Amino acid sequence: MANPARHGFGLNVEQEIFKHVGAFARLGWSGGQNEAWTFADVDRTATLGVSAKGESWCRPGDTAGLAGVLNGLSFVYRQFFEAGGTGILGGDGALNYAWEKIIDG
Image 1 (tube, rainbow, N blue to C red):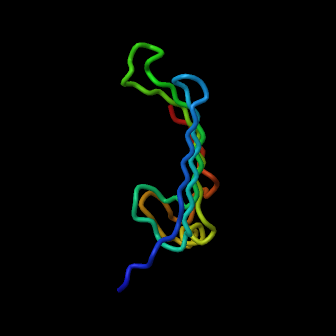
Image 2: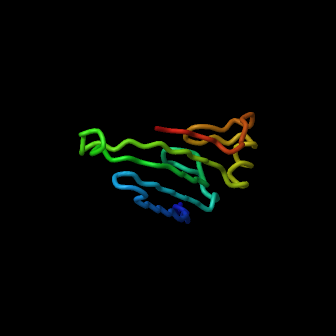
């Protein structure tokens, strides 16, 4: 049986806003027609954050950051889970399939 192709894209934007301080944004999208077999059951993702290089606190090899993330499923993938399908992390028909919201630092 042939392995169906997966289509998607990722976009990463980084910008220094002050010396040693930057902002970043990342977007990701996949078609949602194929079951995921990677690290997460996600078809849509958006991240926005800031980072600071360690020179400010005398540790030039360090970087600290804070980011907010939104993860979601395509309509087709959500229907698959609601019908009882399972994936890498979730799915049993009884979950809340709203956008996942994450803050990480």
